[in-house]
Amino acid sequence: MLLLTGEYDLTLDIKNRLSVPAKVREQIDPEAHGSGFYVVMGANSILSLYPEKYYQRIALAVAPRMVAPDELLTYERVNFATAGRVELDRQGRVLINDRALRRAGIKEQVTLIGARDHLEMWQPEMWDKYLSDNMAFQEQVMLQARQEVLRKDREEANW
Image 1 (cartoon, helix red, strand yellow):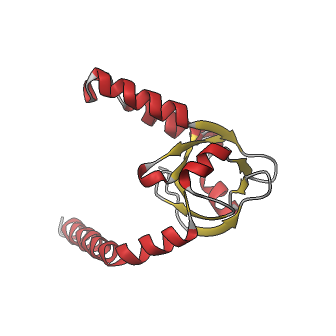
Image 2 (tube, rainbow, N blue to C red):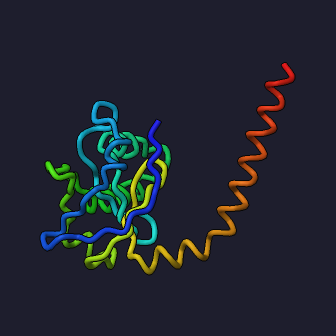
């Protein structure tokens, strides 16, 4: 199971290379998840980095029966045209395409966050606003999840 976590304030270098933190790289098993990433334009123009084998599974999961044929064609054109495979270099950096950065509005500063099965690249100001706007919701969901775990633990203890 892949569980990518954390938030990291980073700077793109002059060649648009992003240094993926060692803590993040350690969470990714090259055998299970692949040696590279796919950079994909996600919701709200947020750039996402998916471990390559995981992205391939997601891309193939969009079956013709899930959407109408014309919608599938639109999805495939947009998704595959804007996605790109990148490799980690020896210093743990990935090269991010100029066009993808421009579409995401990212200049030099980046906040990289773990989002369970992928990483997201945010403009730092946008991330801070998103976080402050959604912290109460996160707390509510976390409390509900904790209560569910405690309920299941009590049930198992009664067996």
